[in-house]
Amino acid sequence: MSVPPPGVTSLRGRANATVALLMANVAWSVVSIGTVLGELDILERARDGHFVSEAEALASDDRVRTVAMIGLAISVVTMVAWLVWQHRGQRNLSRLGVRQLRFTPGWSVGWWFVPIANLWKPFQSVRELWRGSKAGVDDAFWAGERTWAVIGWWWGTWLASNISLRLSVGLSREATIDDYIASDNLALFQEALSIAAAVLAIALVRSITRRQAEKVATAPVVPPRPDIQKGPEGRMRP
Image (cartoon, rainbow, N blue to C red):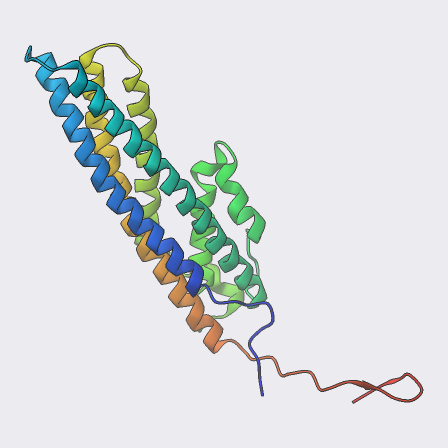
């Protein structure tokens, strides 16, 4: 009986968890949009001279703050799940015999946390993971695989979402109502980008997981080692 390449494990369980968390991010972004729209309505009424009670304003602030904190927690858990999935996928590539890889499993995760370099290195590592996971090609020439457009769109929306978030937070620290309104409008844009990035990420996780499963299924099998026993003189014998 033959066995799969040693050390190769399925991505399916980790992928399902990551996809579920990405879906949770999408759902919570919708909730966040609702709370920001409510706050925006209050700010615009106050700017136009309409009465807004202190209790109404404070309640809106509390809602926005609570939703933001929960959203941050969901994002952190999702990121951890993503990195565990990516690390395992990258490790599988080397154990499937894919050669000339630029990223080790550790650095496929580590580059996410290196300032400046994290603007492009994670994209490159995920692109390598997607390309290298294709079945039925010479593993020495996997890099010639054309990049799926979804990978570029995912990374672009991810970066734009994070930049928009930083700008929105910066504006919210200003003192005028117009600055708060601008911050909320930018927050709405950021949430839309976040939803798009999450949807594209779901497609990417599913694609890589499917491709790698096909690669494992078509990989050369490793014959089992024969039973080894020691002879009476302590020598190894079959």
